[in-house]
Length: 164
Image (tube, rainbow, N blue to C red; front, top):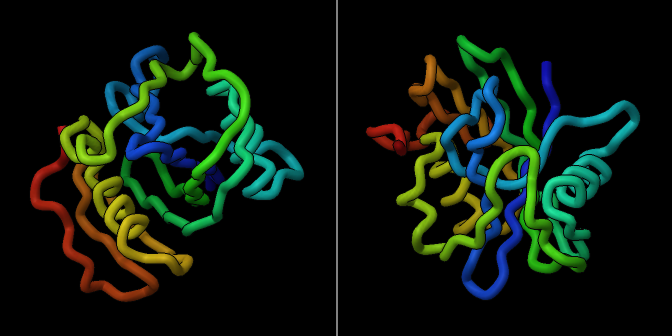
């Protein structure tokens, strides 16, 4: 089982996003995602998100919050626990070249129009509407979201069409 982190840095109505267009073997190829990556031995979720954010962006997170745990279950990629963070401040200079893809500030209102995983729309809404920590389980068949469970409750509405 994989453990990863993901962080959305929001400043002035914009969110720093990563367009995954550089790696050949990439389950996120062509999609827009937040900043993060895989745990290294001995790391806490906070250690991992700060290290990954710095490595991918050149920025040091200075004000961030652990918001939720997202469990991805997939018939293609296996199970992953993703530790979800939001941030409102970082120091440093945004790097010009990221090995993972293209970094871009995106207006918050435009996020829904980007090609991304359907489950991302679910947790974006939770990040926008809830302050408390949440646990979200997203089940995929291929690239199709088939089930979303919030804090153990099945009655979460799934977007009808995958975001492409």
